[in-house]
Image (cartoon, rainbow, N blue to C red; front, side, top):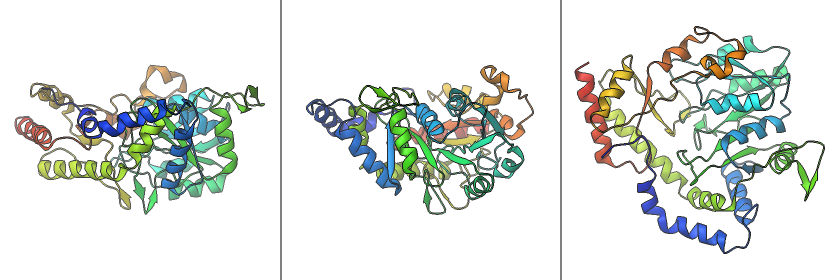
Length: 369
């Protein structure tokens, strides 16, 4: 049997009765779009973050698009972000007509190098978009200080950091708004696509609600700002409500798996995840490094173990973004990481015997390199 990086079936077997009840609750409600389940989830997710507003939408990419638009980012603006991220971060910037400007990441934690941001700010800069990657937070203090100094907005990309904290503050509460994904693999995942933007700013929330619903303020009437059809459906919202009640258990499960990896792989020549001071890591991914990464991955296939690379191609090197003018060598840390990082199986219900299989196979392979 192949051991995969992610598998929802063990969790589903445990939660099946509640998940099916959630579906039945929606189907019996008589309301399938923007009903009680969406409203309830939005209220509960906002409360979880201590914020006034959560506006849900259909996926995490559109959460970024809507967040950027609601914050006033558009054509002619520049958005400072990183290239060591999932492509949707940058796709969203492109979708609103803005230009992504990349800074490098730090070698120790793979997160935005905030020391490089000030030099990247120009008269066109409108937004700072830090990515809380792999399950831990960027140091936000330098970014919020720069934003205040230069009159910029801050949109946090929290697709991989549900529940992570930095110096006691939860991811998504340190900027003007924050975008989340509820793709099934996420720390809080639906059984399909889903997303949301959280914010404490009333005018941003009002704009988000219009933008996700064609730009309508009332039925069939579009305001001066046309929007999208980007609604979260009732079924996924109700499933997310149920799963939100078990959210702390999911976090504990991920940290349990991470601790077992750390113990089992200690002393090997893998570079294991480093937790930045002040951070509580939620381990959306368990990312390790080795200069012979590709050989390790190939040999582990022989053990029936499939590993993943997040991400093999830095965004600034992709042909789809060649028009931005970046070249190989412009972001040396990002590029070096792309040749060395890979992800081990990580999900809360990962059985211990499968995790031991991964650890034992890795140690065997590493001993013969």
